[in-house]
Length: 426
Image 1 (cartoon, rainbow, N blue to C red):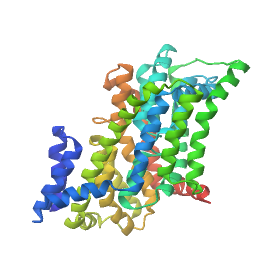
Image 2 (cartoon, helix red, strand yellow):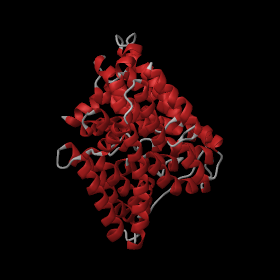
Image 3 (tube, rainbow, N blue to C red):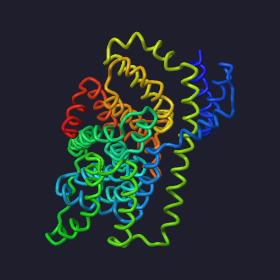
């Protein structure tokens, strides 16, 4: 009964445009009242204790690092480096988008930050070179969701903290699938170039190549430091976030010299606002998580899914179909915080690897960022380009189809995730 009440609350309140944090608090209160245990103090207490989590401290640091890199010229240098590598091929700017997204993924951990930073640079470049603007926007939007898969990843931090699994292992498990996403998108772009007939190429002199490489090295080093440091226990994900913020500040301020001290208040305020929104949702979801537990929703869900538990593939297909639908109407953060604590007990009952499932869940929900009606990244690309949302969606379709196909492949062939993860973890 409580499961139906919970779903009804979301179905009624979310379309009204009520901020998700308030929806979650209302859901917690209504659910508590439905079981005759309403207590406003317990809701407030769980909102506070839910955010008192060391792992969550990584989020503001990575948010700040992303803002610093976007404003300090680092994103532009990554684009130049990618252009140096693949600009000589037909349709080179499309490959630049994908490679730059993979590299920037190791710096920002946010699909929105990736789309905003790279879209602001590459969409005008691609339009000027004669590319179809809608197609360019669609490629940038779908490439940007690689960012939450390759570490560092804000959604993975939230998932790990909400269900009690290792953030480090989740980070390492995302590397292989993230790189594979880039390869699949390049494969689709290859045929897009053939179809659309793009013939642009970019060539650099030896001196220009040396200059670009020299400028890019500080940006390229950071992802390796983060991954190496977390993998070998040199620092925790939270410490990696603080290191990334300090590193980005020093590089952009002292090496690139495109960031001024007068810019810092604006950048810090911007990252603080973004962090506050995320943490307010975390607080609301923590209250819901407490109520979900005492109301027995995991047991009720297990009862609903008990007919599928005997088949891991069937269970994964059902759960992922649900996540795909939820990703279309609700952002990644609330989806993770609301449903991960409910679904994970069922996953464990079925004997599915929690790290493997975590990667699939994050990927599925990130695909929701580029699917209407609530595709946050689609709105970013549309806003940057000035193109209507319908055009951007149309341009994204072939790349989106490839990513959905890859998600299905991960479900049927877990080794695509588990084998690279085993190599990385040794």
